[in-house]
Length: 114
Length: 113
Image (cartoon, each protein chain N blue to C red):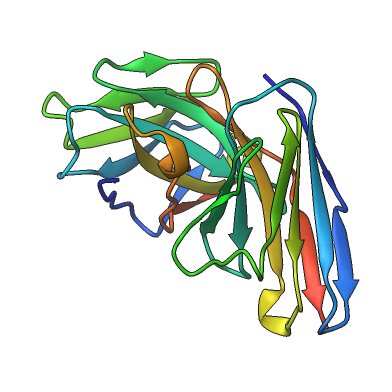
């Protein structure tokens, strides 16, 4: 899978929007962009994923650059419960068999200030 | 989405012993995986648990150390064998859902003393 680059940490204030960037300059045409987050003392949880178009769900929005070399996870109104490590992961839609697991990088540690 | 039950949630084990971790899913799933998260680190994929055949291990992980069973489409076990303090980690069971997202269990926090 292609590699992603994220800032080690970011800080934001409660009730403000948060934009978490991810660079993936070597992304292939069949790579989906996945975002997961890991709250303290919990397993990771799915946030959102997309291929080309921007995506919205109840948790967040995913904005994908036109050239797909970067993307941004948007939390529209951060709460203290959003403090977590956020992982941006690329996943080839054609991967299968024994190579179908997610490859995690170090992620971005998001700190929310009250 | 599917619900994963992982047991035990935590354990403290003596070095040289083995621990078997169970993962039960409330629906049939094709793809199940086991991850390890060492203290302060990100997650590392150990292996893909294949139903009815031997697991597929990632580089650095071997069957003798981490034997995996997958007797059916809802259950898998991971055994951590001949444990040493370096095996102290969180072990997580994961499934791939039909829409492409992955669901993680709550993990087993293992401490080897």
